[in-house]
Length: 321
Image (tube, rainbow, N blue to C red):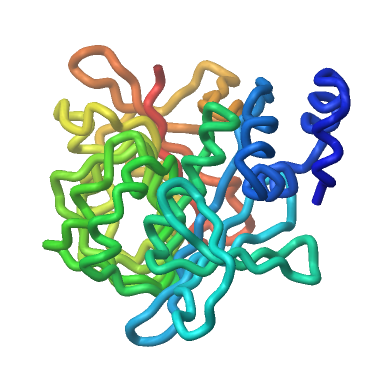
């Protein structure tokens, strides 16, 4: 933590120091006083911090939050305040909290009477300093209760991860999700409203029942359904549905799909590569194509065929821009 004597230095020197300070340490200094916060906030940092907020199960009824930032191993832990012991109170946004300095510079515990609202205040505090953030919210072994289902910060996240967590079909939680978010499902039980739309959905678990997800990008790491269900996505796209649909990746693709074609046309005109939004180049030279009525082309490719021709492997369906 900086000494407050730092603020007596020339402004350009202070700016030089702040811009080379890890975000975690800079934020902790900004929380130390109103003067420190004003000093930190006066500069343009030209960076977008990646924040990960993780809601973790504490027991059957309670939870706590851990929050980290991309360029540091430092962690803020936000817990319920022990009302029995009086302590000096500090403020984060509109909330009075107790900040416990750890012997480790990489750990800081914030005690509060409202975990979720204090977490939101800390996120917004960082956002006010850096002007923009890249926010991921992870739920780890949590049943989404009524309190969490009303947490407005969920709608501000770029990515939502559900790890061994549960969401009921009728939960208000789903009303907070938006079409520009990335959703990751890994274990637990999450029943989604079929009307929801996402930027991308990544599933690391067996689907309990077949469900058509409306998203630009779909990734299934554990696909246990039939080829008819897999090809339903392609059929819906061919029929003019799923307008956002750009890519579909799933395991358990059969090599014979390439031979039977399912009404597709084999590409025979040499090398071609599909470039994803992240710059990845996918070899589609051995793919098969479907051409939609409006002229758009979708291609199915499989990972490289090994010695066992019947071995299942990852399949990708890609819609060309």
